[in-house]
Image (cartoon, rainbow, N blue to C red; front, side):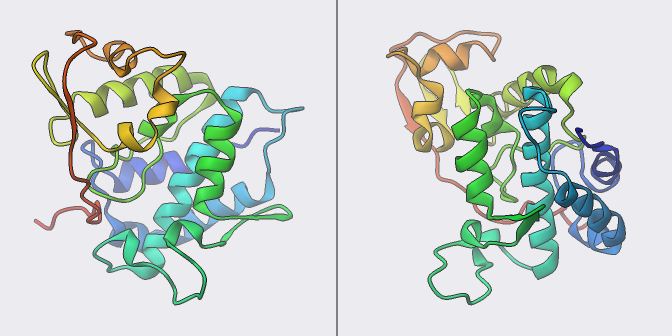
Amino acid sequence: MPVSHQLWDSLLQLHVSTEGWVDYIGIREDSARLNSYLQTLSRHHPNQKNWSEPDQIAYWINAYNAFTVYLVVQHYPVGSIKDIRRGIPFVNSVWDLKFIEIEDRTYNLNNIEHGILRKDFDEPRIHFAINCASVSCPKLLNRAYTAGMLNEQLNQAAKSFLTDTTRNRISSQKMELSKIFSWFKGDFVKKGAPLTDFINRHITEPVPPQTPIVFLEYNWSLNDQPSE
């Protein structure tokens, strides 16, 4: 049966700001609760028989985000998640580290993002919900994703990301977009439709299909809570 994400929800509310900055020191001090939540995830692998599609998507989004936070906490302080390699040979990046144990299976973050969320679900809005612990990523929502609120949460995540001028700057003259729209263009463009079709569904002032597009540089610095 689907699991409760209440523990993760409470951690996010306590240690993540509304702007998406993460208090990794605070989470490290709260590691008992984080570990308890990760153990819950590890004991319950989603399946299509007993889990609805929204339950599955919410689970995998929360798992991606929680295990990413765990990985950063294990290596904190670190300037960027890309600096985490653990010195393992033949591992190309942090996203290839096999450290996520769920029942009898072992995953890395790429497996969850590309092998499950992108492969099994036709849901491009997941790109605005999973957080890679970097400044240019869509912000980490300070609430857990849940099946009952999933559509509303994904819509809000998309709108929040597209209207955040530190990540996208959109006008009818030019669109300066996150590289997420370049890396995963095929997820957003369906049946030859222009990218603006997807974008216009989540902004209040639609832009014409022929609007020029440039892609912004991606800032991989850690999304660490700024010191006061």
